[in-house]
Image (cartoon, rainbow, N blue to C red; front, side, top):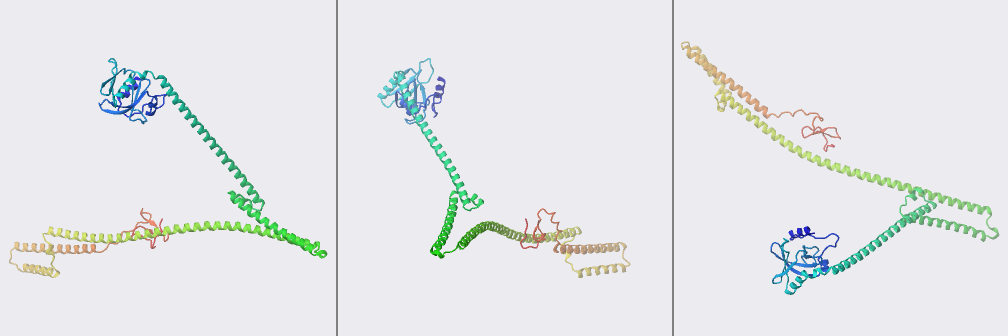
Length: 464
């Protein structure tokens, strides 16, 4: 007990619910009823801060203090067993302290006026030791109230349980009676001419009552017609006097009536059979109609999806065609540029520029004639030195080789430019099974795998 209260004192600033086992919760209201002295005091905590608290001096040397008069839990409990020194140290201020040999902290409380201060000091010093009987009476009253409330709650619960059980039994009995009534109505309907299957299909009592009433009305009308017929025959027999119909005529009349009754019964049976057949046919037609509507809806969805897919494929085809044209143009430009660069490179190795290539065939012919005339002059000049002739021959031979190489280079560049401008044939299409993106059209059997490789000729391919 001392350790528990010591822990409370060490953490007195926390809002902790404090309860004692085998005791009702010490709320502010309960402490007010049990306390010998209650009221508002201002308490100083360990941080030297004054706070207003609602205090209740409960017997057994316990002082509870709360945030307010209606608080549900106490802010702290002070065990006054060792706080034997109670004195007024300042104006309306009470100090609770222990003897020097017990090292416990002191508590300070401040009352609103001197009268309250004196009353609290007296209660803390004397009156707390003389209230054991009052506490016992107070606890007995609380126990009596608690037992009364518990007994009332138990009686109310028992009463509610009994009412619930009665309602449950009443519902079960009503369900049994309803089932028995439905079975009896089905038997009556069967006895009045309804088939067993039709009687078993009557799930609700109101349907069975309606069927039985309809059949009773029909039988009553038939009995009335038969009674009228018999009465008419009797009237005819009595009205004729001695010249009434003979027994044979009456027998024939009865036979005719029986025949008409049998014919009416057969007609009724045929009508019942036709009604059942029509109901079955109507149900089959309704199911077929639902199935057809569902198929039409599925076909409409498939058609919309196919049209959407076809539109997407058309858009993709236009985009791909545009991209292919642009790619081909860029490839032709790149090849032409590459050929030009290669020509520049080869001309560079020969020590010539592009301006040297701007020589037409006539110029080449003139140069060739000049080289030929130079060769003739050189050959006719027999008095020249051998070194000059050799140098001339070498220069002419070098010029001839350079002209031949330039002609070959021009022909090669022209051929490469023509090849770059000529469209290339499409690459061979792989089989449909080899491409992971190929789809087979279920309508024509062709493949759908892009604008160039597709073999399907349908406007809207039908694919999975």
